[in-house]
Image (cartoon, rainbow, N blue to C red; front, side, top):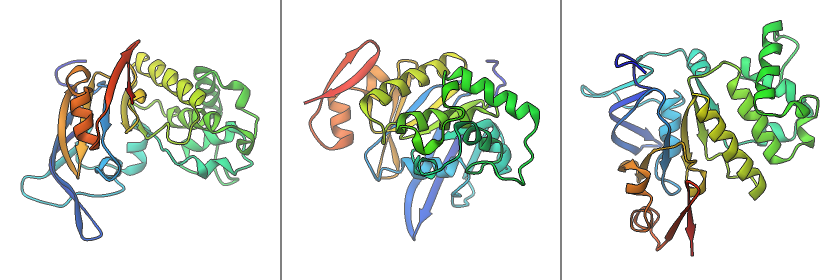
Length: 263
């Protein structure tokens, strides 16, 4: 990465109002290109609002000192932004009750749709890219299987493949393990590590400590719409700091690069 590479995200005094209430309070945040980050906090801390602001689903209040840049640009076409910032949402229910195949679910990433319709023009290179990401994630066997017959973990891997079809510079994971069983969570973390090692930046939103894979080096804490911590894992992922963040006593162990909460 050269010194003139613009940061992935740069927020200056960003505030967001929802339903007449300020839910983000003058955030200042800079995330460098290629950096792997975890943003943690309890429910209602502002994590989801921050993500919706980054993805242009919400917009910050205008002010003389407010600025928000993604990949160095203040103005973005949302469709173009999503080709550079792949989004893996936690709501897999959009796909779970569908008869579409895994292949069509991945192809739909080119059109930001749920499945592929007759009016979508699917080019040969789109099929090639779909085959490529299915192979990358080792899920070629899911290509012709209806999504409704997949486990939640298999659907999650298909959604990751869907987010990869544009070769994004970064992947945003929003509470990715929330609907997964233990084995699927382990597979998810393996996949995230593999993607990080391939050079794709990870932006992880979570309140599950084991989701913070070893490749993530920086952690940001959020509470009540404010950033209350920003530092390395050894600095922030301690019993004292996590207990303060989540409002309860905790104990923390570390094994093979992963952190775990214990009772």
